[in-house]
Length: 166
Image (cartoon, rainbow, N blue to C red; front, side, top):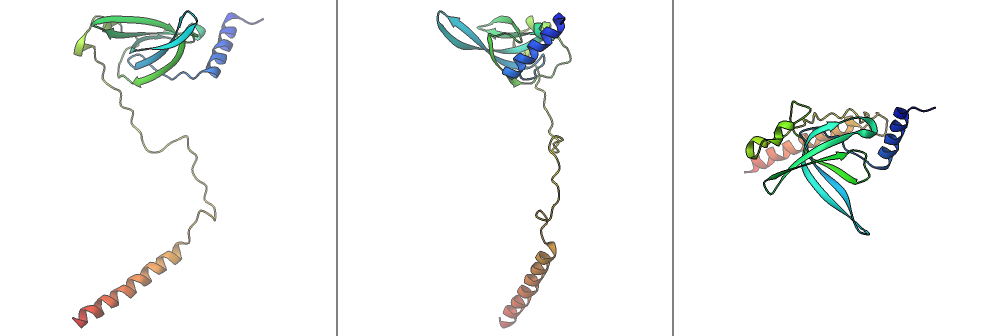
């Protein structure tokens, strides 16, 4: 007999197989596409704001987003695996040192800003496998060096001979 936790984990795996959810954290500015049903018509309305809290509890996971609309703060909590969420897109990653940013509720203007987290790219990708060396990949280096030296030797006497003529 399966426990409730096992059933929840299976449901989460099924939902994640169907739609791709990006990895985001509190402090990130995210854009959520919310499905709204008006009569028989469905449409997607976007809600963009700062993620101030995230709760990870299998199928019961949720996150809270706050945005300032016409000078008034609007806070909305979404269930992460809900059917009303069409898409989630991370606009900007924020650099914060707390898990819950409830202090942003009281702040407005410049004091409510969050600095952007800059992700450094090293240049070496660990995921890519190194290219194997085969005979096809190797270029004959000895012939190229010889031709380069021969052209240098040939071009130098010609220049000298043209200088002597003048």
